[in-house]
Amino acid sequence: MADGAARTGQPLAPRPLDAIDRDILRILQAEGRASIRSVAERVHVSRANAYARINRLVDDGVIRGFSARIDHERAGQGASAYITLKIVQNSWRTVREQLEELPGAAHIALVSGDFDVLLLIHTRDNRTLRELVLTRLQSIPEVLSTRTLLVFEETDLDRGTGVPAPATAPDDDPAG
Image (cartoon, rainbow, N blue to C red; front, side):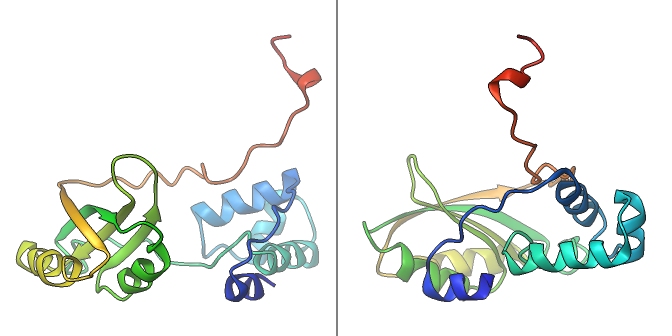
């Protein structure tokens, strides 16, 4: 199960997806509340098959969960920012645990480049954001520096781009 891998810290091996799995993932990304019946009809399989496939995708960790897309401004979180952090080498796990506890933390990524961590935060207003950066983030001993990038406008693309395309063999190249 995906939970076991998450607890042990060991990544799961990638799971090969067929065309039906990819179609199911696209449907669920666009409409997380789609019924099993609707999914089954749209991918041309039985409800039992769709149900089994979705459960397998969840158990294998391909589907990590189901969630609602939030309009943060309408939900009282009028300030959003990407915050870059430089951290002490080899302190990622410690820093990540502390960042996960921050109110409004929406996304945390360990990245390469000029900084080490990219953090997306949603807060009530700029004053709350300022306090979070100056008092919470900068007081973490392993955080060497921060840079705050205010978000003026956001657009969710939600085009199903997270679903991998089928692998093709070199002989399948239409140009060749």
